[in-house]
Length: 149
Image (cartoon, rainbow, N blue to C red):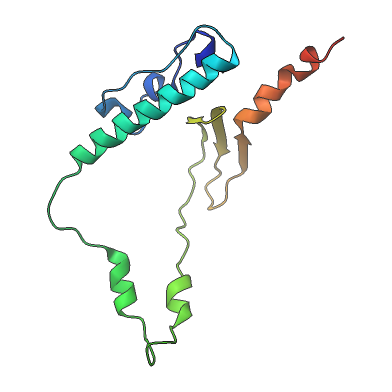
């Protein structure tokens, strides 16, 4: 909604996260602020996404690669070609690591706005606090002002 109201704001450009800096793309925006502007922004974002995907595909290096999951499947005991050892397919250990004693806030682009995740670690494998701020929830804060008679 922000970009359809004349503001050129995109976290991928502002925060420079992931590999978006490596690609040539533009923030899609309109200044009218109506539903047509939101539609045009969505269509423009899809076109920019195609540009990003094409550039990413061109940047993938060639050469041999190794799929480590295939090694696991080669070790599976197949009896008469019908029965699989299901344990070898579904049992994967969860990665565990100790969270440092610190606070962290991360925000990323989501379809309806900004998705925020706040995490507080306390030197254990479980976070002391974990708060997710979905974009739809923050957009609802204006609802009482919109329905005033």
